[in-house]
Length: 154
Image (cartoon, rainbow, N blue to C red; front, side):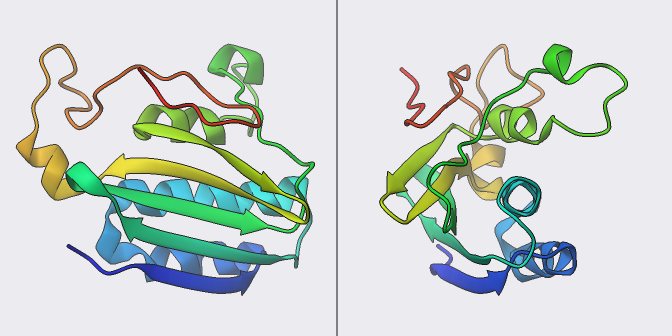
């Protein structure tokens, strides 16, 4: 199992690719979700704000990713592909995260928030085959989305 990792950075477009490189050993899904969450901080909180990216192992072959920023009021909103518009160049990041993650949500505190998600590691996803979901064998349950609360799936 990989050890926990913490990255402290300022949210800038140049740092997004650095986050992906730093998380390479955690797999493409973790890299993609982390870059989407850091990009959301840039877009909705502001460029140059301090961000903490954490990745740590969870039970059952999952990994948890958390991206913390200093704005507890700027909450993520899940917009489906229809809501984003067929021609829109943005607006699908959380839908992508929702499609990849086992579950995701937001933890708010007085002076910060953490958007988190849990993903199966590539090794666990390769070992688990769920009938009816050949395109994402590691994903076990349909998404519930999140807006200011956990989206733990039942």
